[in-house]
Image (cartoon, rainbow, N blue to C red):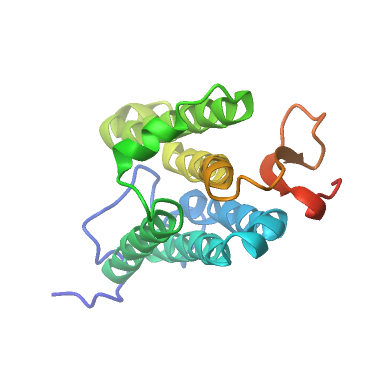
Length: 218
């Protein structure tokens, strides 16, 4: 039985060819596409700082666990080791658990869904974008697993890399959706606004929550 640290000791192998660009990196594009986790994680820690200070500093923990996922995913795709797979999957579970413990502590899931049924255009927009990004990400993940032979035949085995980028884009929108709903119900005295970095006027940006006097123009 190979060591859990050994290269290719995991039974999971994605569509991208192995060791095509480096003798040290099994899946080159699947490895380095995780860089988006290290971009959006710190940015969201900075942008959500006022919310984290007033509501809960465990918001920082969620952002850090998001970066941990990127780190272990990078390690897994670099080595295809069983240990890398295990650490990747455990970090995802811890990330989901941290989000649940922060934003759903007082209600079970159906009650939260009922809370989210709102006429607030900002929250509805966040939810819609989150769902679309998530569906695109899952479609990429499934396509890489199920239609691998097709993607290899047309020389485009990069769907799992696209999954990394799309799911890391989903994180800010999903996180801010939860924070917006949470702030409206848990901090009704605060002025809560949805803003986008780097500019509200830009067609694409990262969402964040602006609260009261801590508002800043980025």
